[in-house]
Image (cartoon, rainbow, N blue to C red; front, side, top):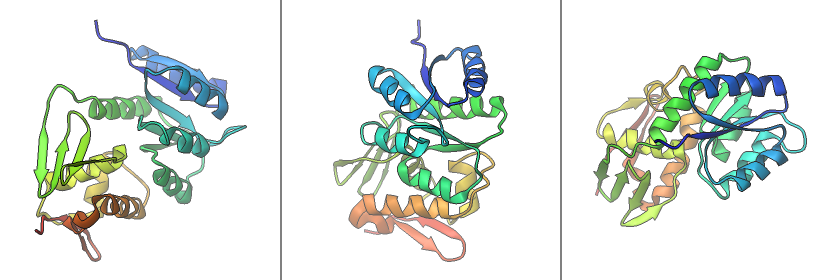
Length: 227
């Protein structure tokens, strides 16, 4: 029998937690709840089986960003942030800290469940072992690992997705809109800075091979191996 996937839901509103929990349980997930940031960290550290975290931004004691920052020091577990503010700076701040996706309140629980399923599908894709190679870079999609010049490189979940997408579309000019739709793969209402932030971090982690990602001014990017 398959092991039940465990999700940590963190929100200081018990009504919101119940709403999210009911939808996830109906889909067969195991749900752990926390009412504030401190409790969230305690539960996360106490339970090694948590596969994904749904995290509210505005909470007492520790807000979502603080919780995310702390977790990212120890784990790459996917994090979906729930935000009541439509603030772009909030979102950029979150992406800098390693948030994987944003969902603005009020939201449809069905959309949230669809995002959860998509992320889990992509992070647990052990069935189809697939390796992509481009110049000095090797991407092992099954193990979710990247090596550059034979050395493992730590990438966040979204950086990994972005690099994979670039390699799969090597040599093709990609608009920012196309990248947003494909990598963030839902109707994302943020702006291009989200992509630029991720590309900047990805280039710096690629070291001397950062120039594989070419900027096409006024349009987007193109991935090209230039040895």
